[in-house]
Length: 149
Image (cartoon, rainbow, N blue to C red; front, side, top):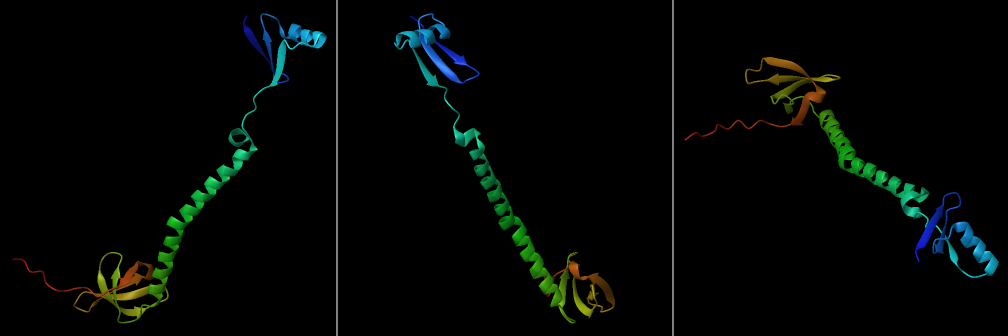
């Protein structure tokens, strides 16, 4: 009448019987009479790609792709900018007009080991030592007046 399924936990085998008979009775009936009153089927196994050791490879590939993207979009361009900035700072000489990180324009009057002496303003008397890393560009200021009409 009713089909019953019993899952044996120790051997992972499902025994399906008919009626209200127990698993032992179904197994005894099958071996003694040779009729199939119960069938033995293997329990469904878990897919290897989702839970097994094979799931480690996609995870490693995803992390590798993230690290590569981080390198190409953040670290590499920053290193390129630093290299260009160092080359620009090494090429600065006496008489060049520069822009400092504070936004002030000046003219280089002397070059030291780790600093420049920059002359600020138009009175030619204000000379201030500035670190080389504080010079952000070689630029001449645009001193044209703005017309206010």
